[in-house]
Amino acid sequence: MPELYINHQRFRGFTMTCIVQKYGGSSLADLEKLKKVAAIIAAVRKQNISVAVVVSAMGKTTDNLVAMARGISAAPSRREMDMLLTTGERITMSLLCMALNEQGIEAVSLTGSQSGIITNDRHNNAQVIEVRPVRVLDELENGKVVVIGGFQGVSYKREITTLGRGGSDTTAVALAAALNADRCEIYSDVDGVYTADPSVVADAKHLPEISYQAMQEMSTAGAKVLNAHAVQFAKDKQIAIYARSTFAPGKETIVRKMPPGSLTGIQGVVSEDEITRVIISGKNAIADFEWAIAFLEQEQIQIKELHVANVVKEPEKSEASFIVSQKYFYGWDSIKKQLIDKLGANIEFDTSLSALSLIGEGINKSNDSLIETLRLLASQEIAVYGITTTSFRISLLVPKEKIKLAVALCHKRWVTENL
Image (tube, rainbow, N blue to C red; front, side, top):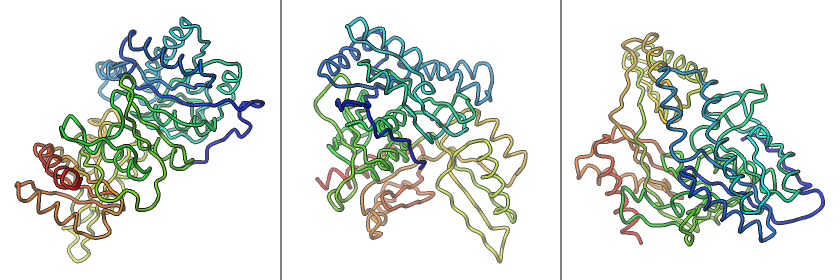
C-alpha cells in the first residue's frame, strides 16, 4: 500500500479534536434525511470539534447514472464513466453544505481533487497513492465543516478518477490518516458488522469489535459494510474505524488492531453472488492464462482466486481458472467477447456459482473446519466446485441456487452453536 502524506503539523497552531465522518447513500437518500444528517454534524461541531465529512451520492444516484450510461453504450469509456459518476457526490456535498449553513454552521464543499486525493491512473477502480489535504486543513482551521465528495480523486495525470464501488470509505480513512484525525466514523443504514447478512440469516449476531484482518477478509469476500481498500488503509495507519447506524444510535462495531488470540474461531459467514469463474483449458492453457491475465490487467479488471494445474505429461489436460467480481467494473460483455475472440473454445465462463466464505482468526491452523464444512454441505447435497484458503478465510464455490442455504447451515454450525 502506498505511503500516505501525513500532515504532522496539524492545524498549524492549535490541537482541536478532529474527526472524519462518512455518510453513505442510504443515509442521504432524500432531502429530509440529508437535513437530519446536517443536524447530527452541527451538534458535533457545536462541541468545538473539527469535522471533515465524506459523502456518497444520494440514494440510488450512482446506479441511475450507470443505467443511463448503459442506455447509451454497452461498453462506455472508463474515463467518461468517471466524469459521469463523480457528479453524484458533488450534488450531495453541495446540498449538505446548504443544509449546514441553514443551521448556522459554516461549511464548504470540496471535490476529491480539491481535497488533495491523488490516485494512480486506473479509471473506475483507482487506488489512493497520496493525500495532500492542504485546502481541507485551511478550511478546518477557519472553523468550517469541510464536506468532501467521496469515491473520487485526481490522478497524477490530472484525470478525474473513481475508487470503485464503496470507495467513499477509502476516501474517509485516507483523509483521517492525512489529517491525523482522532477517529474515523462510518455511518450507514446498519449499526455495524454482523456475523452474516441479517437479510439472509435472521439470527446474525452483532460484532462489537473486529480485527482489521478479519474485516478486510469479510469485505473482500462480499460483505457490504466496509470497503476492503479502506480497511487496508486503516490497518496500515492504525486508525480505528467506528461503523455505526446514522439514525439508530447505540450499537457500533470498532474495527481495530486486536491482541493476538483475543478473537478466535469463525466470526463471520459471507457470500458473494455477482461472480464469474473463468476457466482456460487445453495444451496451451498456461500460455493462454498468462495472456488473459495480462489483457485483464491492461483493461484494469481485478481477478482473484487463481488456480493453475499444469499437467506436464498430458498438457491437453492443463487448466487454469480465476474469479472476476463483476460489480467492480462496466462493459463485461465487451471484455468477454475479446477473450473469446482470442482464445475461442479454450475459454469458458461459469456464472452458475456463488462464493461462500468463513472468516476467522486462526481458521486454518488445522483442516478441521474445512473438513466439517465439506461434510455439512454434502449432507444437504450442496456440491463444492472450488476451495481457496488464507490465514483468515476459507472460501468455497457452490451452486448459486444453494448459496442462501449454505450460508444458513454454516452460520448455524460455526456461529450460533458456538455462542
